[in-house]
Image (cartoon, rainbow, N blue to C red; front, side):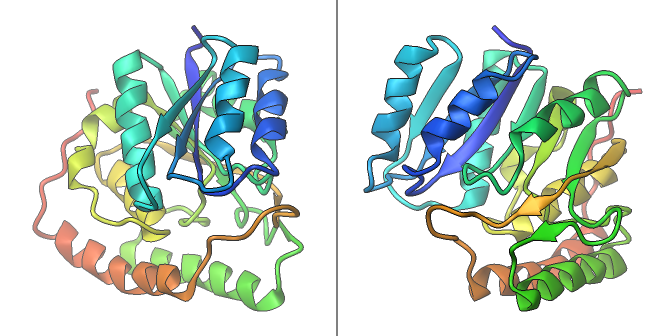
Length: 246
């Protein structure tokens, strides 16, 4: 068994998921994959089950009954990964907007450089986004600026969905208290890790908009992030965060 697992939430990703799994399996370091599929009607889960036969013991799936939200998909995956004994637990999209070749760089930041959470960051060295409409780039970029302003979280790309956690982070941060389901989930996870005293490193990556399949982004996701951030900050004044073991 690998020391690392990459959690990939899916909904209708049949065009991407086999190629993504094969690409990850070919990386020099051994990474296992857990797909959390929310009842994709396009047959995504069946493709993953085929991959489980091609790569026995390295590819896994949790099938859920419907679209239950990004946040709950990751929480389900985190709990599975902790129970399975993985040391490094990744979040990653299926659509190649996150480059599989960057996975070892996120791994090294935690496994070799000693950070607790590494973030594949679009904004730590400017704006590294390809093929996004300018309006969406600006909305995402300024949303991250806004989050930093409100929360004082020292991370440039607060909504990044390409991350590597050391298991101690997820064990410490009380996953059942995570409230948000959309993109605010990513903000809440980083904010909570920071409040628990964990060390975060941003690793610069280039984000490429998906070529195949359909984006799951919506206006409601962004409004949750905008209003959720204020709730998160105010709530932090009244919450005692568990601290990392020294």
